[in-house]
Image (cartoon, rainbow, N blue to C red; front, side, top):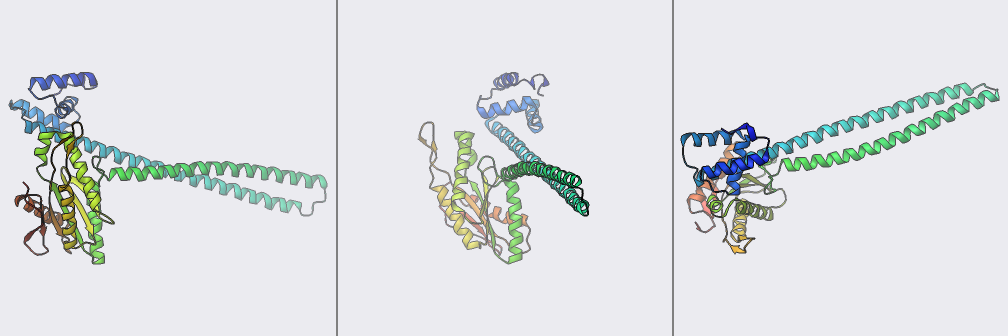
Length: 361
């Protein structure tokens, strides 16, 4: 169990993490350090439970276990980031509501002032009728001038406050737009995240059913990604994820929606696209990624390339989104089993067929 003694002292936590890693004969890599720092800080209860179980059983912290723990830490951090983004969106929305209420209050204030001024004008008109006394007329006019001046000052104040409120509203609207975009995007790749994918797929299916237009789904997975991570490290693995994301963005256009589905798996939602069109896009994505070369920036060392396997399915009227995703995933698994670096297509009728691709295990 992690001790709460050092939980608020980053320096002591860092030292304790290194000491515990040495004691367990764990390589002091940045990824392993992240795991043990998280464990000792107690931030992620799942990590605490997993490590406590390993320690309690007296088993060895193998490379595979360390990798699994790091991926869990990364997922926890991504979840915290999404929560922060959601909080920023809610906060900006609340502030926008307050600003709008402020503007409405100012408009009500201005309206009340205008009504009072109208009453004053009516009173002055009534008072002037039948008045022959010059002094009285001058007094009435003087009062009217004073009231007009007061009204002008009030209007100026209201206008200045309205201008300030309008500026605040414009800034808050931009904050909301930015916060919503961030809340719906993957922090690593910049693609749509899983939350956005679910929402966009639901909308796409609704549009497809309403307009009787085709909708296809492409699921993609990086071949041998875990082995690449284990060999070259997670930082370079992250660069590969970004590279694939750029290729997906390059190959999609219009209403197409590219998303990071999770881990090394990606998805592309293809509105107004039938199965043949989806196959063409899937092959374009696969070939684009297959032609890229990975280079370690620090040394210029060429690490070869990576490939994708994918599954394609066209939405069938009446099926659930879970069934659509499952059919595309089945195609993905079929492509993997048939040698990787290929696309497998789920037909609208039972059965699979493989198109294009080369066998590069």
